[in-house]
Length: 128
Image (cartoon, rainbow, N blue to C red):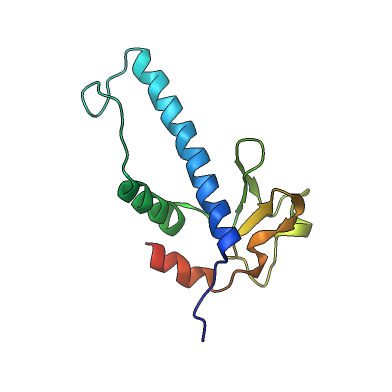
């Protein structure tokens, strides 16, 4: 018996989105450093290992991400969109599953890859 489910394609898109936004944050952080801002490590460049990235991934999807209002797209360097927005509600908002994960299929932007995921609140608690 299954207790909750995120398929492999959905998981891949979640990872890609996380890394896209992480890279953007790191670029922003690097620009600030070049402008003379201090870094947490006293001016040295940031280095990440896979373990810290995995923990950050779990923290993001377990604590920070708002499943009720936000959807994920990996197109155009990745962005978040309002699930209930006028242009997206038809394909990505499901009032019977408000905590469902909405992820746009990059090959078919009207398709919700996350629509088949189930028990997302339980999965979110596991990620915490």
